[in-house]
Amino acid sequence: MTLINSTNQISQDIKLRFDWTLVEIQELLEKPLFNLLWEAQVIHRKVNPEYNVQLASLLSVKTGGCEEDCAYCSQSIHNSSDVTNQIDYDVKGVLNRAKAAKQAGADRFCMGWAWREIRDGKPFDSMLEMVRGVRSLGLEACVTGGMLTDKQALRLAEAGLNAYNHNLDTSPEYYENIISTRTYQERLETLNKVRNAGITVCCGGIIGMGETIKDRASLLKVLATMNPHPESVPINALVPVEGTPLENIQEVDSLEMVRMVATARILMPKSRVRLSAGREQLGKESQILCLLAGADSIFYGDSLLTTSNPSVQSDRDLLSSAGVSVNWDLYDS
Ligand code: SAM
Ligand code: DTB
Ligand code: SF4
Image (cartoon, rainbow, N blue to C red; front, top):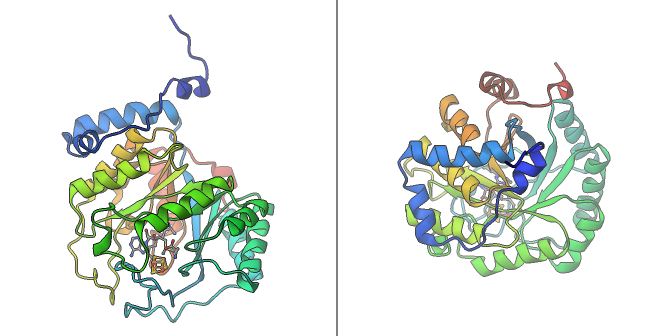
């Protein structure tokens, strides 16, 4: 008999695979729901027996005016969404927001720039200062700012950046229906630069953009065959924004999110699976199913980048009602 006496040992027993096939992944996504939930939960309980949930707060440091044509995005100059009411933040403003996020209980602070790519110069120097400042507050720092060079990735790593978010968004096959100004290959190259600089990779996608189940499986296959797996995998449901080509698309069924999260947990057992945009449309019960099935992080705070998120209070209530362990001592009451 093998005695397993620590969480670490239990999670060491989980064998990671990097050779998942499209058929296997689609079969998981389409399994009878209870069987899928059971399979995901067995793994989730092993890797996260206390059901800890990482709270990540998000701030749009530079909003709007982006040259890319992502069909879902309010910040693209190709779309007519009105995001002009948001301010651009300086270093002090960002660090004030990071402090407030920490006081509200966040563990991670994610900063977004609506850029096609990072360019050297004052805004990049400020980004580095923001990263150093966020780290010195004792928070994990994550940045999303489009494509970057090897040298910029190394400078971000030196500043202490923990993670860089760059999503693949959808399958390679469906991608051209969503974005034409940047290729899938360019996205993969950006992810490699991040990885080579020693920064952890935060990479996921969006469901509800008109893709098929096979497309979802194909996106997950790209992620789950990366070696190592992305350390964090944000799963977003489309937030339909007025002025974007996807504004009137039919809302995705909440159980589709549950299936996506559960499958991601099975494929990438040790990655953080973040239940990301679209939680307002989900409802309490589906969110709880996602937390049960494998989500171990949420975006926490009243807003995402340009759209709203469940309120801090409703998230505290959600986590309490699920009995999910969060380090409550961190919270301002
Ligand atoms: N410009 C950078 C980039 O594209 O990498 C950073 C910001 S971008 C807004 C970050 C990610 O947010 C996108 O890749 C997409 O997956 C997600 N996102 C943006 N708008 C969304 C929406 N309306 N609904 C769901 N997810 C969205
Ligand atoms: C991610 O995958 N989702 C976040 C974060 N990474 C940067 C962004 C969600 C944006 C939702 C739409 C908005 O608020 O503009
Ligand atoms: Fe620009 Fe990022 Fe929005 Fe695409 S998702 S338009 S790259 S801000």
